[in-house]
Image 1 (cartoon, one colour):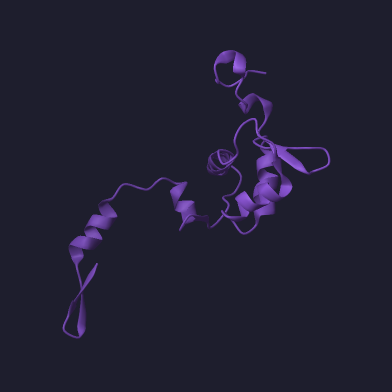
Image 2 (tube, rainbow, N blue to C red):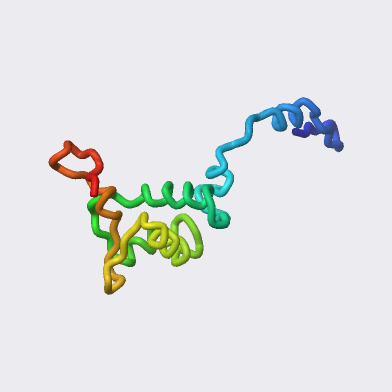
Length: 121
């Protein structure tokens, strides 16, 4: 965007035009910086899309301990508890009654009778 000319910096107008001409990036990608979530969007379509993407971090049919869930979510966002709560509230992650185990909902688990396709409940 700039070049150095001796002891001066000069703007390169074409670089600015090119960057403004780029199509808008994926709204989900805009929420991340260096692989970490920078903000949780307000409730709505964007938050739902984010939560669905985050739920993909959890393998259907596998049971995770609370520390495993915490570690996965803390690697993405500082407030891992909020992410966990939003995932549970959205029905994308289920919590055991004692709060010590988590997993994807049954409808997201592969059904061996239908060759790994999602089971229908």
